[in-house]
Amino acid sequence: MTVFIDTSGTPDIAFGDLFTATGSDSGLGEVNVPTDSTVFQVTYIETAGAPATADRINQLVNTDFGVPIVISALNDGTDPITGIDLTTVAGETYVDSSSGTSIVRVVYDSSQCLGSGFFAFDVNGKQISFPGPVILYHELSHALRAATGTTQTNDEIPAETDENVLRSQEGLCLRDVNNHGGGCGAGDTCGGTVNGCFIVSATTGSAESEEVQRLRALREMVAGATRLGATLIDRIYDEYYQFSPAIAGRLGQDALARQAVLLVAVRPLLAWYTLAGILAFDGEGYGATQAMRDLERVCPRYLGRTSVAGVLAGLRAGQPLPPRMPPLLQSFAEDVRKAATLPHAGWAILDPLARAWGAAGGRRDIRAEVAQWLADAPLDKLAAPADAMLDGELSALAGLFDFHPESRRVLGARLTRAWPQAISALARHGFI
Ligand SMILES: [Zn+2]
Image (cartoon, rainbow, N blue to C red; front, side, top):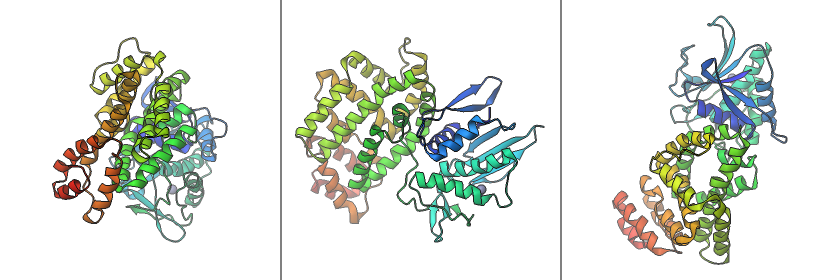
């Protein structure tokens, strides 16, 4: 009984950041505390081969220090106990004895300075990004020494040294351990990413599984093709981050649910994205035929294609799940419903899932389904590309619809309304 997450603030983000620090190890979970509704208790059974930072989380979660460690991820900027504005410090760790017994409190700003980001410095004095999982891992380094009575005179040096272990695992820039400076604003990421594919990692059991790597490669291909695609992916991840850590956390405790989500959601989605990527980037041919067969294979008839499609369509429409679903899947319904209301995540995840299961039922043309889905991409919610980039962006975007040109005009109709200043360029590239 050592590490807890405060249920006020943003516990899902705290869990997600902790999950990242374990290298997306599905052995991490959380359970209610029957006697105390203000916290969740973190549980962790470390999977063999998990990275070095996972060993630290394992040590914290599974050692009895005689004092609990409570993590609060707050997005309103101020710690109610110390009154410190977290946007000025990113995070803080201290021993709170106000209740009569000691608690090591780790409090950090999950809003990333209300969306502007936090930065620290590398050894060349360059501003580098300081994302949530790194802030939390840094504070947990202080917490370990606070819980064991080994806090050092300058405790920042060991905290920043530990922080760099997570940074290097995630491909982020390394911090100057002798420079505790930083502030609100953008910083270089050195090409690293900490927004993991939580659910895929949880169901496949590893942040480096074949499925996670395929998804990452597809994401890089789309982001590399157009600035619009890269921005869209950022928005999708921002939304995905709002509901996926909670799902991944529950999956961590239940092998049957992991298997169910892998079969019903992860594999069909991956097959769908792969098919869409091949059609959009390579056009029709042997690869596309193979990808269509794969989609048929991962949406097998024995799982009941039309009923899966029906449940998904119902969730998208806000209807309750059928009563005989297992309770654990029922417990996902709220998260799925939340996802359905998010414009980018709804399009990127629920929409293709319903289409994949519906199309695999055999009554619809899969190629046309993929084209309609691409044409529904919420690009019209993004700002139009700057003039200097407009032609290049629209030309690359238009090329993605060569396998089904009618759909290009469906998207074109929405872009025309959203970007009236770009009408002539849209016409030049076949969107009108
Ligand atoms: Zn510190």
